[in-house]
Image (cartoon, rainbow, N blue to C red; front, top):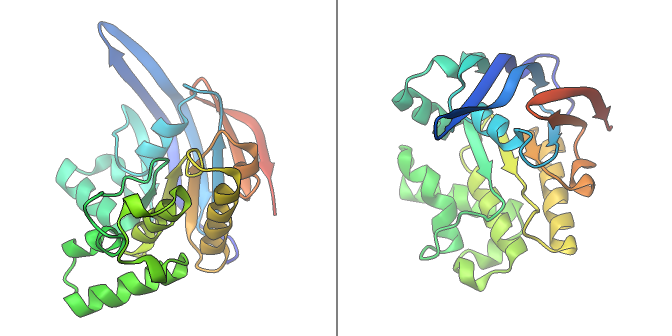
Length: 234
C-alpha cells in the first residue's frame, strides 16, 4: 500500500517523566511529529532514550504529562481510563518481544482472545481466527500450545492475535529481539507484507539495524529528543 497523504498519528509538544523515589526523571521532551497512514516507522536509539515510552504513549498504554497524541483524529490524551481501554482494544494491535501468549491456550485460543470482547458468533470468530493464522502461515498449528511452538512460530501467533481485530495501527516493541537470525528475518518479512499488502501502519521499536532497514522511515531518539537526522527507505 502507498503511504497516505494524511497522518494517522499526530504528536504535538509531548512530554513524559517518571517519579523515582523523590526524583522526577524526564524521559521525553517536547516531541512533535506525524506518522502517515500506511507508514512503516522504526524508532531507534540507545537504551533509556524513551523509545518504548513513546510507543506506549502512542498505543494508549501510558499517559503523557502534557502535549497531545491524536490517532485517527481521536485525541487519546483526553480520554478517561475506561474510554482509553475501549479505544485501545479497537484500534491497536500489539506485538511484544516475548510474545505474551497464554501458555494454557492453543494458538487458536490465543488469537481468538481479542474477539471474545466483540459481538461475533462462535462460527464468525472461528472464521476470523483461521484466516489470521493462515496469513501468518500457521493454519496447521492452530491446535498447538505455545510450549509446542518455536520462538518464531510463537511470534507469528502473536502477530495473528495483533491483527485479528483489524486495528488502525500495529505497535511492535523489539519484535525480533528474542529470535534467531532466520526467524527474525521471517517475522520482518511478514510485517513487511502486512504493511505493503494489507496497508497496516506499523510503528516498531528496535535496536537492530537489520530490522530497521525493513521500515520506510527510521527516527532516532536520544535522551528523549528526536534526532534531526531521519532516514528514509523506499
